[in-house]
Length: 153
Image 1 (cartoon, rainbow, N blue to C red):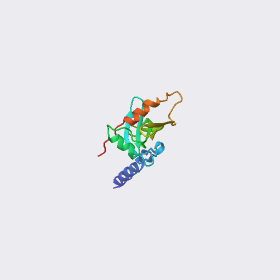
Image 2: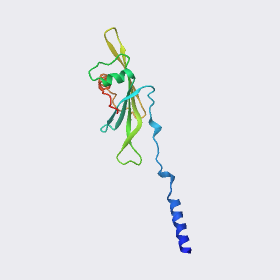
Image 3: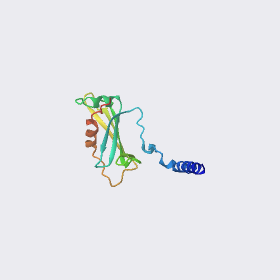
Image 4: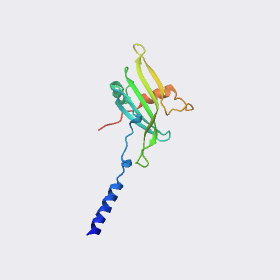
């Protein structure tokens, strides 16, 4: 009887000691971006550059991204946020967004009655290094406006 009680006490002690708060999952809210009233158009992962990007846009930008043949709509506003990838804790081989690398804003504005112009702005984030090349403006405008919207169920 004494040995059975001792065995129960030892098992109970081992169970209590095996519980450790360090094994809890942690969220990664430190590098989130608030796009305001813009909607997600598409996500882009570039493993060669080690980046994850999200393209956001207003309703006009989203409408343009759904229509593969249309020209950009005047009044469309795009935001492309790019993060550096970092390993996801407790998930081997999976990456998640790290520090923000860059934020690009693109607005389609009316130049005159028949033409439109692009208002482009490139902002660096904490992960951007001074030795990194700045992207060429016209290439980035073409890249952003050529993106097709992801299909959501």
